[in-house]
Image (cartoon, rainbow, N blue to C red; front, side, top):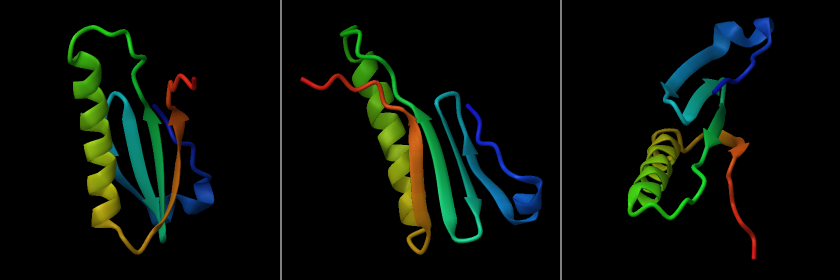
Length: 81
């Protein structure tokens, strides 16, 4: 997981959280969240647990910084049918 930031913006950078599947940073009044959701392999509740944990972390970040604009990206591993 990574978020690349121009050197000119580093003085305004705050790392909010860094996990294996998620990283979030705040630059001025903007949140940048990069997330890697799991692939659904149908192995019991493991997929649901990881998914719910990640969504919960994102929800907490958004509620902690309601004044910020959000850019959310990453690999969502969604199967559209």
